[in-house]
Image (cartoon, rainbow, N blue to C red; front, top):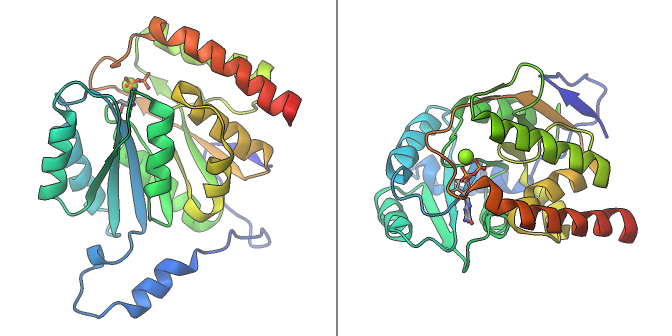
Length: 273
Ligand SMILES: Nc1nc2c(ncn2[C@@H]2O[C@H](COP(=O)(O)OP(=O)(O)O)[C@@H](O)[C@H]2O)c(=O)[nH]1
Ligand SMILES: [Mg+2]
């Protein structure tokens, strides 16, 4: 496993991850009159959403506009569960209005399960996991560049890496520091952040996703830790975090579940192996 912070370049002698042959085959068999959007997407952006009716439309349409500038066929997958507001109705409207938007809805509120199902539904060569209050197009551009160059198999947008700027309230920044420390102690995590922005080549990381056992807040952590432990080349890039609104769930209400799943993760990773 190679763990790098900041941008890195692959050396010519480094083995390059295998290209997923399916998009090339799809492009070759596509009749010339069909637009790129009818081809399999090159990029899938997966965003779990819960009770987000206030910011969803503006964030989604802003994201579409910025992502179109990348000039590659893409899709945005919203993974919803448990919303009690108009999020689901809005998702249906957005899907009707924009061919790039797809969504799923799966039962009770559960961030990890939604993210996992969203990744499994994604069809792009590259998958980016984002959050509706971030939608960080700069990270998308940088991450796809790194993955495409073969320099890394997974790119993490870190709030704690050198050069990152975390403009969230101190208590939330501190919580990220604490959870990172607990992951280091419990499962030997070597990076600086697991929650939030990440990008990877779909075919390469799907088996890792499938092997994850915990859900809710710690699925994302298990995913990154398992990727690390299975020897994937991971690069962290520092991000600037400017949330568009306060978190939808109170930080302190999340603590019991995070601790419970941390103990589970310790057992699964360290004891069961
Ligand atoms: N599907 C789903 N999404 C969630 C859930 N909780 C939070 N999210 C989404 O996860 C992302 C991050 O949530 P946020 O409340 O900002 O928490 P933060 O990660 O601590 O900043 C947002 O896109 C939320 O809509 C949940 O229970 N289910
Ligand atoms: Mg947030």
